Length: 81
Image (tube, rainbow, N blue to C red; front, side, top):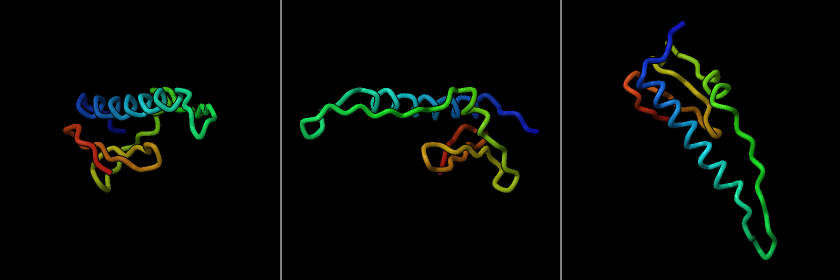
């Protein structure tokens, strides 16, 4: 089992932070067509999100599902879909 280096850990945390920032934005009540609407999204804790990351020997990077897409995290912290 391979462990994440610091650059990979920072990239994973940045993905989670972006997801949570979107949650806060969506949790704000909004007025749409005269009605007040509040979207109720539920995102995992950082620990649960971190556990979804798996190392892939095939592509040589960490793979994590993120907001409906699959993101790869390279050893230098670069993320790509």
